[in-house]
Every structure is written in structure tokens, then in C-alpha cells.
View 1 (tube, rainbow, N blue to C red):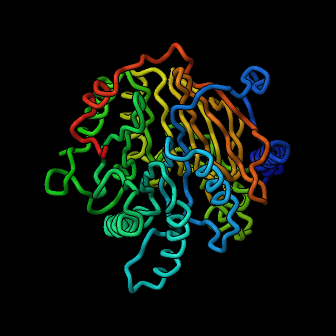
View 2: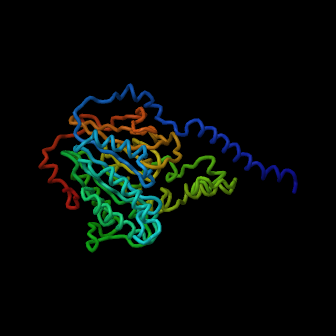
View 3: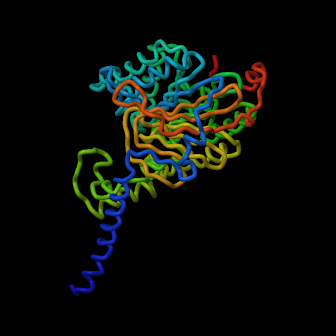
Length: 420
């Protein structure tokens, strides 16, 4: 082989090595450190904690499926403290992936006892809580999207309803939704089963299964109608899958994962596959696995959902799925990823993100009597006390809401309401 051909072939390899080295150095500087967009670096001075009368509080806790079951779990301990402080005028929303790795298996399956134990620890944490409890399902609760996932979902829903009757498991019966829950006067929760759109195998649809939708497009039309009829209310929309993400499911990978791609699946699989290893991140960014934004089913669901949400200012959309904390303020909407209830994973700084942190914890939303809405970041230490607050942001100002008499607010709830 002529020497110039050798160097020509070597050039791409050298460029790749330099690119990986640069990204690795950058990641070491910011990984596991809270990132705040430059325009809000002085958030603590610009947004001091409000001293106002609270109307309602929401804890958004995602991906609790791998919590410690011996009483030492830092997120569960922090959540317990939040529950005691919040009391009855509050709601906990569990954003899916409630049991790892594959939801709740059949009673005679080998993993059933461990799955029950993990779920029981969560239910015990919530048992004496005076507020509302809302469970959503995620891809792991549907047996990671496999064709028999619907049966896994039904088992988990039945188990939660049996062992914690005060909890809402929404949408019921694995339906796509949307369903609504009136949390307080002028505050509405709308829940979607986003896994429904990416799930393989049987999926419930139509009156036979108790679903209000008869096809995959109807839920978005129903969502638009709900949001239109409830413009006078503050609205939180919850689903498992993020609509914006700087993490794995958004196609973001570490430099290490380019060299050791198998660590994406198993953290200790340090098998070096340089160059070839970069094909996996490229595939998941462009084509995507079923759980990735790039996958055609996820992409279509995301596009349709954003088309609806972006017509209504100040909608808050909360999700889990990626194992970190992320906040995006984009096109007059607020998009949260609160999926670090039991695991953490890499999240890339910058882009459209206002705030990111690779850390266990969850987001809280505080709704005040004057109409203000505040986002709080709640992260545990190794003890039972929270870490110093790393980010706080006012999402909605006092003038952005209109007080509506309770009777009017209740009358506006759609027929698919889950309110009790």
C-alpha cells in the first residue's frame, strides 16, 4: 500500500481520537455538576424563595424502580420528608418505570418476589400520606416494550390498586388517555400513557377496554379540547417520555460510550470497540431504539404532542425516562425531565436546556395563592436531609392566572376525568 493511502486512512482515526479526547476532557469538567444556562447563572439572587401562601404542591418523582429496599434509600427518605411537610394540599406523581427491570412479572415467575418487594417499599412510603397519589407507567413497566407488556402493565395496576386503594393509576387499563384529575381550584393534572404509542403487541383501545380513544390520533384531539376548555386553569401534563432531553434517549452519549459502547447496556462491559463503537451512538441518535426520541414511533408521538402543547402558553409537561434532572423553557412551555428517582446517567450541558444535573432527586412544583408557580430542585444527601438547593425558578407569574370559581372549574372537566 502506498504510504499516502496509509496516512489518508489514518487521518479519520486521528480526528476521531482528538474529538473523543476533547469531549472526554470537557465531560470531566462538568459531569455531575449542576448546569444553569448563562442567562440564569444568578438565579439565587434573581429568584429568592417566595414567602407566599401555598395553594398546592406537586412532587414529580420518576423511575423509582431500583430503589434500595433496606430503608436507606436517599430519594425515598427525602420524599418522606417532603410528604410530611406538604400534607394534604399536595400531590405525588410517580412518572413511570416503577419496577426495574421488567415491571411486575407473573406470580410464578422467578423475579416476582424482588419486584413486589421494590413496589411495596414505595407503597409503604406513601401509605400514610394525606395528599393525592398518581402512578403512571413507563416502558419498563410494560416489560420494556415487549409484545406481552400489556399483561405486565395490568398486573402492576391491579397490584397498586389492591395494596394502596387511595392511589390513582392513570390512565386506567393501559389506555392512551388523556385523563384529567382536578388537584385544586384552578389546577388541573392531565395524564397521558406515552408508552402506548411505542409499545409492541396488544394495546387497549376503544370502549371494549374502557378507553375514550378509538385510534392513535384521537388522544391528541382530546388533549387539545381539554387544554382549550381549561385555559382558565393552570395545567400540568404528565407522561413518561420526555419531549426534550440532553441525555441518552435524546441521542447524547459520553466519549467513553463511543470507545466502550457495551457500557450503555451494562456498565461494567469495558470491551474497547473504537470507531465501530461510534456506530451505536450514531444509530440511536439518527434511527433510535424504541425508547429513543429518534425512533419513528416516538418521533411521531412527540411531534403530535408538541403540536398541541405549543398552542397553549405556560403548560408544564413533566416526564421521567432519562435518569437525571432537566428543565427546558421553550416556545412558552416548560418541559421537565425528573427521572433520577433511583438511577443517574450522563446528561449533556447546553443546547436548549435551562438547567440539568446528573444527580438523584426530583422536581417539585409549588403553586401559590397569588397564581405564581415555582420550580424547585430537591436532591438528597447521603443522610435524610436535602442538599442545598441547586436551582429554583419562577415558571408563572402572579398576573398569568385568572381565578375561577370552583364550580366553574369543576364543570369544565372533560368526560374522561378521573377526579373523585
